[in-house]
Image (cartoon, rainbow, N blue to C red; front, side, top):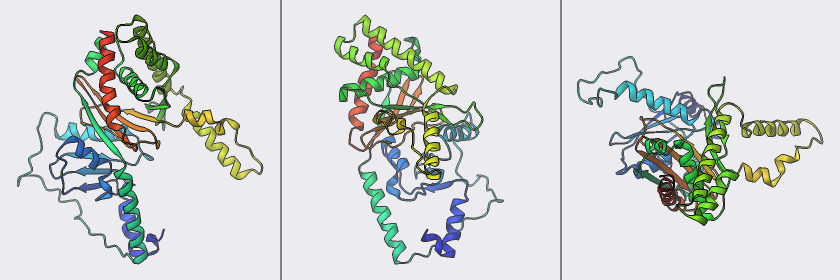
Amino acid sequence: RDLMEDEANARCVERVDGALLVLCLDTEAGATLQESSEQFLHAYGVNRWFDKFQLIVERSGRAGINMEHTPVDGHTALRYATEIHKDQLSGGGALALDESHQVLRDLPGPELLEWRLDGELVTAVTDASRQLDQLAQRTQSVVLKFEHFGKERMKALRCSPDAFVQMAYQLAYFRLHRRVSSTYESANTKQFLHGRTETIRSASPASEAFCRAFDAEGHESDETRRLLRAAVEQHVQHSKDCKNGMGVDRHLFGLRNLARHQQQRIANYRIPSLFSDPAYGKFTSNVLSTSNCGGDAMQLFGFGPVHAAGLGVGYMIHPDAVHISVSSFRNEAEDFAEAVETAMLDMAQLLS
């Protein structure tokens, strides 16, 4: 608000805010996929405008996308990356960056945006930078490139690849914490007009029964094997229901927001007790926030945790590998990644 009081600053904000996207050209380059993932996630706030859809290109040429989730979903970014991949790389190799490259002469040249910052604005920017730096410092992110097997092996084991990986998350979390917790998996509902997402609840009585039995009875138990298949089948059916508009999370979320609007407009209006019940808060806490974003155009996909004590788990299931990005505010990302790797190997052995 203070920034917009100056006419020159307001024009600068409007130029950025009205842009389709922001192109971030970084002078540094991550030596590894792990380092690049941290740069694409937060970069400690340097050379970023987080309200916008950002295309980030490192000095090495490795590129990534950082997007604010409110206007678009992960599948929108995946489609964007996939179209670029098809247009520029499929069959033709990388673009040649030499003197023969095509110059797009109809595009306007770059314009330097001049900002007017007084003492109060400089202080505000400094404070915001410090807070973001502290957030980035306590955000641990780990890349797991699981290359023992991928979706082809999971299918050979007569399992849905996504359900297999989700049950591995449940088993890994249970082994670390001796309990199950609220788990979010994004379901795509774009088959509906204006459809975006619904929530698949991966933690279920069936998944908990499998986790407890595996720990108690080990790798060779017929009962554990039966419980794993039951948990996988339950997850597959629940996923289909959510994609077909039969989930409950978005419906309840809409009712809760309607109740809050009613409370503001109607004297003595009482929000239904369901929404203040501790069980509902626990149900929607999303301690494990997960999302499957498949495709050949990207090596990795990830995001930050949505719960102070939680984990953010983005993953891509390839034919012969699973690439997973894990984030945590409590330095649990590495432990969870290791537990997931062990869980997937154990589950494959159980079903073999």
